[in-house]
Image (cartoon, rainbow, N blue to C red; front, side):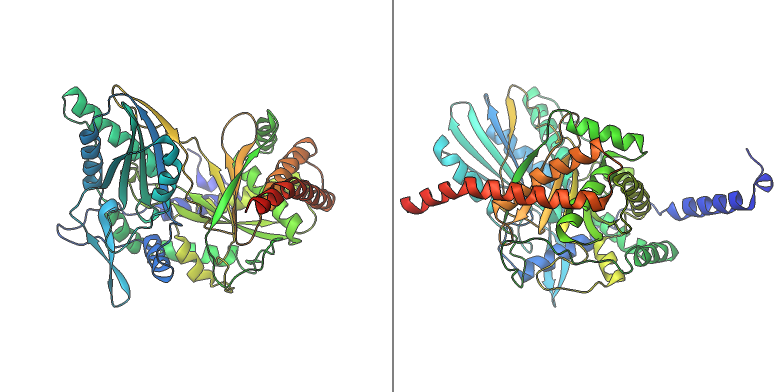
Length: 493
């Protein structure tokens, strides 16, 4: 091992910083709550609970998992599997009881909500849409419900709906694994082999509050104050409709598809610049939004799994956090230089990813604008491969997509982290944007990625007018194509 006395003053300073960083990273383990102690709500759960109090009866935070099942399904066994999963994971049966305007956690002693009925294939889409958009009562409902539709002999469709207050993307894989193990064990005549859950979500929520005090939390608070000091937290997007005083959360998605190999080529550029695909797409998203807004300071929100403790990996719960990413585009950098800036920003912010978004908002205290999400209005998501559906003995199970018809932000740029072509989606709030505008955005984003892949040293002053012209052209083309269909609909009505 190198003797510290032989290092230069600068090297000793860097070594001291690294040791301090590692020391600060040491956190207390999560401990189970005493028996009978009610589960507290995490900060993220409290935020969703208050949002639901302000605007109840919405499906904005519903998450759906839909699958087609072919074969001799044991319906009662499937229902029992769902009940056992709910009883294993406290998050799915925790509600927030209103006590003097504050949510107090309470555990329900119930299984999953369940419905089953025969249905024709033609009725299925509307039935699934109704299931997906049916709201939860966060003060009284179990946060998992299942609806099984029998289409014919050995033909079923199952939709599982959970509220985001009790789950996240990672939780889907846990749910599928446990359903499959419980169901298959029953069919095969054996005991299910499920890992022991050493802690529950309520234990994490209690631990989280404890972590938000002390010197470690103070260092993270100070980081976010400096990182977002002077940030332009209101993005001036080219909306189609006047912005209402409150976010209505109704929305849709349009698919994003690049040319074959376009994603691989962009990934190779990122790798050559010592950046990840995530960082490169962060830079491309910032360049797109900067070009269309005219702003040189773009703030994005991006989900992170936030399961850094191994005991959390097997839990269903709302662990995901939103990481704030600031894309600085001042000084007319080349796209290659922007990649370096985004790499530096992402690494620094990821080191503080466990600071809850609500805490960051509280610390930064940004200016509030009615109808706009604080700190950011565009969500940037890197989509990993979706977990496979549960493999059930004697059955063929395939995933189906069911849309909740909602959007949590003005815009979301979702990029699939997969080889081959650039693929993903643009999610948009329909009270702000027409579908044609979202289609133009996705096409322009695909163009931008192709341009900077071919010419990474292009300066933003050259790139911006290209982006603006492409967006205008794509929008005009799509509006012209949509006009005859709209006139036809009007004539029929």
